[in-house]
Image (cartoon, rainbow, N blue to C red; front, side, top):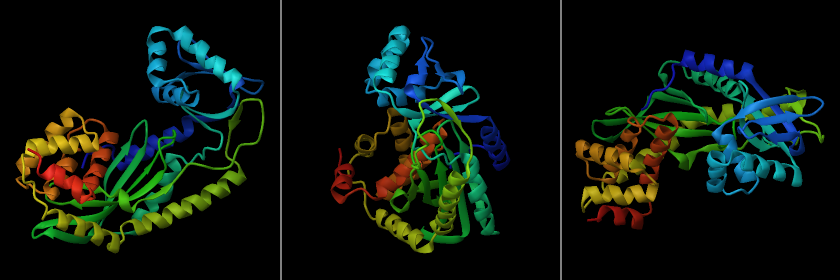
Length: 351
């Protein structure tokens, strides 16, 4: 399993984020994109300019229905034209949007109904729950990227064998995005002791989307602060998150996933392993470097089955630089397990 931050480093980082972030809801007529790509928010209450992340540019492109390829071309070759395009649509089709900022940078351009459930709140909720498991519960990996927070924990007291001598333990992955890249997710994790790989089962996940109450109407840009209504909504949501964390390492779910793994040990790769990896790569949208890693780990593992392929995919997650991508590969391992029989057959007999 890929390592990110220590628990102490993560706690400090989310605390720093909580103190540095600022959020605004603004009518787009109070926004102006500048030729350098920055965004100025201007009204009686607020007048500030923020640099703009590539993620935010992508959200603006999508919201204004400007094709991303053309948006990027203007961004690199005709920044004045891009600013004129964006400002035209900001004023022609006005709407209220939430702008999330951190350290002077606009990091997200979202609906004014976006529910702000932040990494600090998630960590503050789930870490005490994990601590209640007591001895045997280990936090195996923590990641905090520009996109998401991840907490991956394993319960060493819940363990089964896939094969004799090949033990796996039950765990949980908690993840959250503050910038509109998906829901709060609580997913079962299966941790393989032989190679320290983690598999994330998305088939048994809990998701809660960041949709909340609309902020009160106004033509001005207003900075958002905590309020009693939002706090009450968030308490209810975080209690639900707490309950789902408690249930995520459920023995019945874990046993079901292990049974899938046992079944995968019986599904052989009958054709050419090189071609099998290429076909799988096409199905899962895996790049060429990752395919090479999967093939290497498949051959080194000496297990030419669907189970071996699953482990090769999750082992490759340790090799990639991005923590976000590593987590995606851990989830792809579960996709190998749940491939339809006809799709697996196509992979297994590829020559």
